[in-house]
Structure formats: structure tokens, C-alpha cells
Length: 325
Image 1 (tube, rainbow, N blue to C red):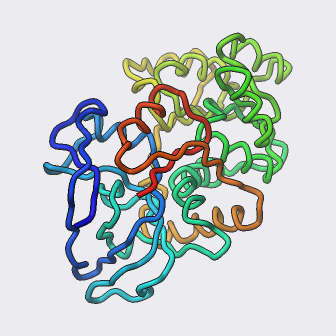
Image 2: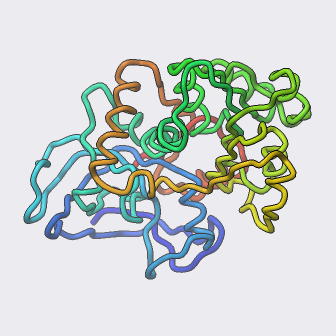
């Protein structure tokens, strides 16, 4: 019998239970994976808290993990026992020692990408890939604003921007986090605890503001994001770390300079195995080549998943957090 994290109703970290679990043999089209490292992401908290719906109870949690194939089900080709694989966004249940995952949700891990690097960077890295390469393809010389630049997504964004020659202005809370974002590749970092973000963006851009703002924080940064965006610019609201943006008055977009806003999800930009293969190949190439080095700053035993989520939600983390089975 193996272990997993399971919960029976939405709530706080206390609803997460460390229980015995038998995933069973893989069915048709499925692969049984033994996890070596599991990614912890804000979307996990959204599912646990009830912000995102759960299909049935009791439920597992987590969508990102990396490990080794134990067995394959009927009709599966391309994977065999012993293969190194990753699931960037598999079915709920990644917080587990063993998990059955549809083969279509798996990607092969190159030898140059470790299990921890994959678990720390797949979901976050594919998020940066669609933000920087698909929503609006950034080019050398572009200037962008990226909130929470010292977080898991943010540090990968800083490194990716540096690789592209993009001038990324980041925001972070406190000197330590600002230094981390700067070291990762941010051209400038604004400490939102002690500085006026909008005023600093105006200073850093000679009053022009930026053409694109990436906002994964949500409610707390929404107004500032609009004020930092140049006329006809784009605000990409891709996360709700401080709570969802609500009560949006579309007239504000006109008043701020005919702004564009999008609320994307990774699922739309990685909707097929073919799309995931292209995106992950670009990400893994940057990791294997050293342009992106995933920062695994926090490791928790699987049994302490609740504590890991509390640290993430409380903004007490930098870089990526992984669970170790």
C-alpha cells in the first residue's frame, strides 16, 4: 500500500489527509508512475479551497510531478517501464507516491533535466512559455512588467526574459526577494513594500509605461497593472494569488488608454499533446542548456503538503516548492 494526500471537502490546509492509497493497475491508455518529486502550485490551493470545483469526493490533489514509469496499460505506445517522465498538468492526484496518469498527459524528460527540476519548472515554465511566446511573442528590446518576480513563475520569467533579450521590470516584496529576481535576470526590480510601483514604472520608462503587464497576483495589483500599461497595451491577468479580480468596469480600459486585457489559462494554450510537446521541448532545451535553472528553495515531505501550501499562500517562499514522497 502506498500513500497519497486526500481530502473530503474544500477548506484550509487542515482538510488534507495523508492516507493509504492503492492506485491500481493502469487501464487502457494509462501509465502508472512512481513519483520522485511533486510540484506545489497556487492552482492546488484553488482546488483545495473550493475556488475551482472538484468533480467527485474523496479527491486527490496536485497536477504536476516527475518520476519513473512502473507499468503501462493496454494501447500505450511510446512509454515503457523505467522511462523518465513528467506530468505538467495531469489529473488531480499528483500528491502521491504512485499515480495512474493518461499517457497523453505525459512528456519524456531529457537526461539533462532532473526530476526535481522538472517538478519545479514544468507547470511554471510552460506558463511562462505561453505568456512570452504565444499570447504576445516577445522580442529582444521589449520592456515588460512582471508582478511577483521572485516567485516560482517569476524567477523562470526573469531567466527567460534575459535569454530573449527582453527588459523585464519585476515587482517583489522585500530586499531579499528583489535581489533574487535581479540575480535571475530582471533588469529592474521594484519593492512594492517600500516603493510606489506605478511611480517607479513611469520613472524607469521615461513616462512611457510598458506595452505588456503580466499579473499573476490578481486583486491586490489589478489597479496598478492598469496604471502601468501604455495606451493600447495589454494586461495579462493569469493568476489569483491575492484573490480573483472582480467588479471589472470595462469603461476603465477606455479611460486608461484603450487597453487590452486577457485572462488566459495554460489549458487553452497547451490543449493537445502536440502543443505540449512543442512548448515543453522549448522549456527543456533552455533548462538543459543552462539558460533556466529552476530554483527549488523549499522541500517538504509529502505528508506535510498542508504546511507547504501555507508557506506558499503566506508568501513565505521564493522560487519553487516541491514535495518529496
